Amino acid sequence: MTRASAMPVQQQPIAPADITGLLLAGGRGARMGGVDKGLQLFDGEPLALQAVRRLGPQVGTLLVNANRNLEAYEAFGVPVWPDTLPDHPGPLAGFLAGLAHCATPWLLTVPCDTPLFPLDLAVRLAEAAARENAQIAMVSAPETSAEGTVALRPQPVFCLLRADLRDSLQRYTAAGGRKVHAWTAQHRTVQVPFDRPGDAPDAFFNANTLPELHALENR
Image (cartoon, rainbow, N blue to C red):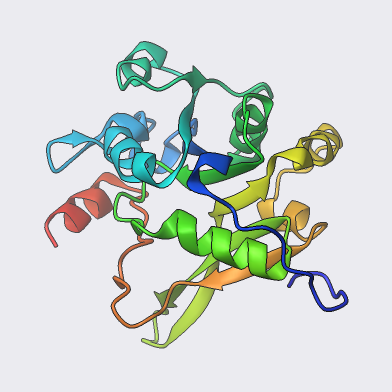
């Protein structure tokens, strides 16, 4: 847990119907040359559509956070909501937009540039959140360093968070806060390792550039 606390009291199981999935596609795509990252093709389909199809069966309902090409995203058949904060300040603006329209007790965020995220993402985060009585469950996934060593690293945009954290996030962003880790550290957060035998090693590989996207597609 991020915060020291007494022994957690397990809460009730979190069902898929209790979770709204939020696809984050509101970034500037600066490292991709300013293109709309969610609309870039992967295996012949837009990244965002791939994510919608992958996340949809895991949750009760879906939302998309996007700030341009809204009609293209709406064509996926999912409600689309832009940032309420100006100047595309980062993923927490997407979190806030999702929480503003979340009608379930939990919100699960995923980025649009990680097309191979696990099919059991929601259930494993939900199990950990319930077991630890956490307000936030965050993915921790293996990453290989330049030296070839492998270590678990937090993946802060893969978060299951309680919808009642909206006021906290509003206060944090209104004060100028923009770092996901700094905000989640204020709450009971559990990191959930995705390093079981059989877990895909590239499940959380995010494509920040077009060459990275093409390399992932060709694996």
